[in-house]
Length: 272
Length: 249
Image (tube, rainbow over all chains, first blue to last red; front, top):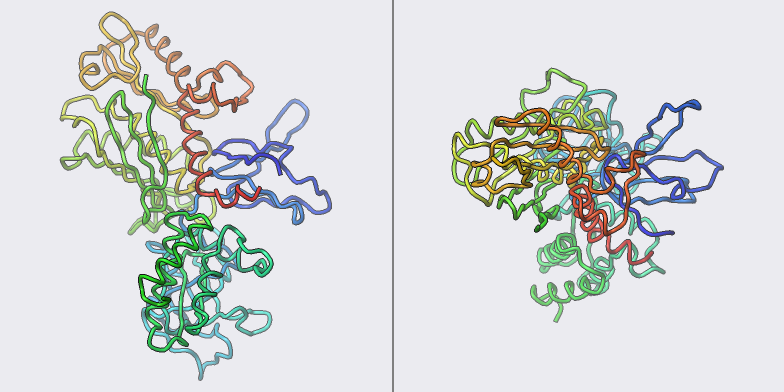
């Protein structure tokens, strides 16, 4: 890859930065749009940025996208995993909050694994679900629909469903995306994937205490639970959350992440 | 001349934020953007296909008054034109920009509000960029004063602005188009033309000469112009945010 290229709104994507794989059509990620410029010999197309960010290309999948600032607001996109909080329930739907100050997303009362009219989860206000964005609707003011099952199989793939116990921590959307990317590419052989070592480091140090469980929502929420840790469960949960939040806010380097984990675990008297 | 100072994403809870300080006029602005959010009772907006841009200007020491309402109107029209309000997730939602004047002299009632306008425009633009609001272009703005002797002064201080015969604020887009022209005082067309040329050269630097729309990316030439300053500020923030990604390249 050549020098990193930062684009500002209205900047054109240079031709030589585009992937040259011609087998399948080029796919545009968020932050880019195609404009056609009328010229003397017909019209030509240019790709321009609509947001500021770092241009990244994936030659294998023939995609080009713009990595924007990590603090931005989450905009629901189909197939994203999110952590939603139930606001209230109506006859057919649970009304959930995905991001603050936006309209509620709808989660069908029956879109859970094995749910029927007789047996379905009775979720109360404030409870959490790990859900997938099913549709975002068409046009202005459309409602976002969530689901907790894979509609094709009827199974709750990837841990979808109500989240019981544990605690939710807010991180930036960029950090959430990074955590998801880091976990999807098998982290075993590559130690510092996406520059994140905080989770593997926590995993190593907390193994003796029973380990912990996390779920990451693209809307900038991380749910942490460690029901195995008996009396120190609360401490471990808070320690994991603090490590993630501080790594995010201070944009720590892998080396500093290890230091932070050691410091926080010692502060909370979890590891001597 | 000391250039302005700016940084992005300083606030943790806002979707995007920027601080901007202009040493010449002394103003320091903190801007925050939340977008796209639901505006109460605004679901039947005049243009339901587009996002609504809302701007609030808060003076440091008093409540907002007539002067603030006036600049809010200017900011709303300029930013409303460059925000792509039809992108995914934005129609019928609001883009709310709050600008707090955290430093500099108070603008008294009756004083010209144009002196602070370029700082507000820059802080607003950078906050929008930081919140990843889709924009069709970026811009840069400058304040020019014409003195009694006919000299054109760049970024006059509030006292110099009071003594000036006329004040002009220009905003020039990244495509070298004139986006905003606000003028105050007595001037004639010849003076305005001179001021406009000066503003173009301040905002775009050397690149104003090349008509093909190519922006020179060289360090030396870019930093001289205001558009180069905006670009450098954004690049610095992207590089620091994605340091983990760039290390591996």
